[in-house]
Length: 370
Ligand code: SF4
Ligand code: F3S
View 1 (cartoon, rainbow, N blue to C red):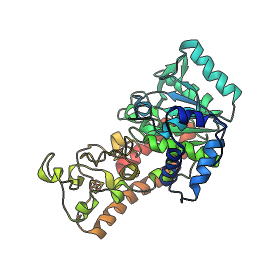
View 2: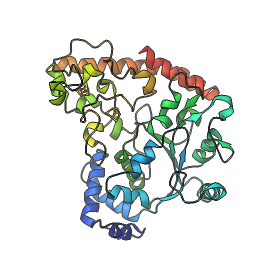
View 3: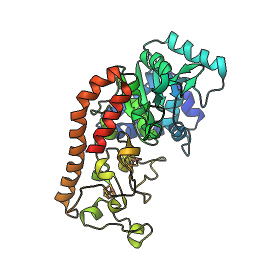
View 4: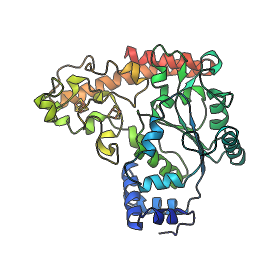
């Protein structure tokens, strides 16, 4: 394996992380990215050798949950260190400078590294009334996003809000909030939705970029396939109970404690794509369904509107309890959603050029109609 010319070695040593731990991390990243084991060495060599690109982190209308998820891991992992070793030149929540000094740091970074830096966006962008509902240093979030994302090598939209507006965009969406893809169309963008996004998927996306010099392959919603290519329902540890027709009927009942299926309690796992059951949250500790709560579909577009009421079961699903029927149920739901998006996608793409809010509303309507 390479030496670590970029300072990673001393950082690893300082945090008490051995080379063995580092290689274990590279193996875990290969597994998360669904790459065969032969890529472990390539990832290790790339991380050891790659110059760290500057990174700026913009935060708009949100709750800072993605920042919290990334920063509040229970122990320093190699992933934290790899991310920390990125040159994070601007992150309002954690940076020491404030006011003019912070602004200078941002503009110096984008000026000196045009086309080379990574941009992370957390939070939605208000479009209504000229974008006045979110301004930083006298600039609207929209103007900042256009300027900073427009000159970045790539933008990573993390969390539900920067993906499709999140809770600020929930009906009646008073600020006309949208995600990055609608506010700044045409940029190099990858979406990592979730509420919050999983720190493991953020790390894996950065590792992929450092290893291959490109963002990972995505689905039609711009989400990486390694993390959003499979339905929750297909990897869920409660799936055998679904297939057997064994459902929790009441919170805290005996079957809830025994880990039976949460479908009747409103679980949206059959209509949600995310790797939560396999990667899990909090250093692999658990995930919503594992902890006894149904999935609320937080990685799907406009989930606050389209997946609620969260405790009502998915509509038009009957005959569950047999394996082939369960698959048919999932395909039926997802097929309906996909068809609705395909039909509205063309209209949205055209309208997005003229009116991003209307295009976003098309998308929400499509999900509601499906
Ligand atoms: Fe798991 Fe929810 Fe599917 Fe039941 S409905 S198997 S709890 S994902
Ligand atoms: Fe979100 Fe469902 Fe995973 S609520 S965190 S997509 S289990």
